[in-house]
Length: 472
Image 1 (tube, rainbow, N blue to C red):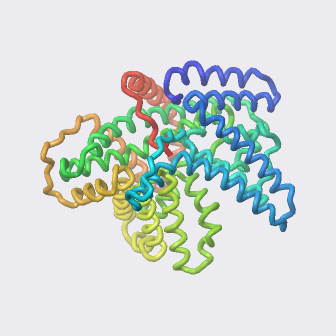
Image 2: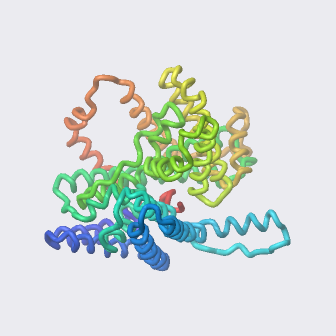
């Protein structure tokens, strides 16, 4: 079920909201309504995997209770933590990486194993679900949070439908109090949340989906059939597509939660205005970056273990981030690429960029990011290197002379204009942007509503394009 399809917009969401607001003051009953709605929302597209999630929730509850009941020095605490974490990782590995592992074993040992590559469907949002569940177990072990007061509250944390499919990744202790009280949404919450939701739909349908068509047109061809212009066009289209697609989903998730009275943490902060790769990752998919820092980088020693080990830790963490994104060597290479630039930032690159004008440092960082997105989007390492080679050959012409419809370029131009406006906002000091936005609120909301209606019409007329991060 998609956030912007008629079934959700005109039946599911209004019905859930109405029942949630009418059930009275009992927080437990409101939580039950949200859990049942979340169960139905996920079961609509994943009727089999939902039962796997419920079994794994039971495992988490058992492990967390055992961890909390044992003394801090009891060795069994670690065993229960390891059991819970491994049980969750086993789900992730089975569904996401089994085919990749078997395929590479066959390639490394041709004829020796002759294993058939299994056809295992990847459940939507499995990586996000597993990461949140591991977060809960580790936080109980660290005594950052107490075990969930009830199975209802923990199941709602895992299955809460606004953020279920593609984040943001939420820590249990950040939202537990909200689930316990299940606040009724106020009028201002509904208004602000719906405006944020409309913004996400506009980003996804009018910008990301148009850019997706342009990017798909390029990445469907081998580099031998493309030229310099086509290669750059495909990368530019995808660079803006992935931003508006994923930030659009985050806007919808945060907006939906706000309509019900819940506050989710932000997941994006104008990442394309970053002047270093480190800053980019502080602004992009912030919930994942925070997760990697707290649950992988710090346990590895963080920056307390000397410069070379620290740089290796950075690289290793983003290598793991690449693996988390997908079961393909392109994702591994993309993670290694970003990890290398984070280490270079720490050694000298950030200081060097800091000596440059902010706009120039921004452009260099943007170029580094685009090269990374080329690897990320490519269907193979061969295609990635072929496209990067074409991007360095200004006189390379396409044998077929591919021509892109004007709408693709218009969407890219709008995306670029938004990023330029974000950069201008940082460069203009002394201007009260919040006050300016408030004075223009009526005009802005009217324009947003008109674009929202146009986006819904477009969504009904055009074939469905899934969110990029649904496959993660």
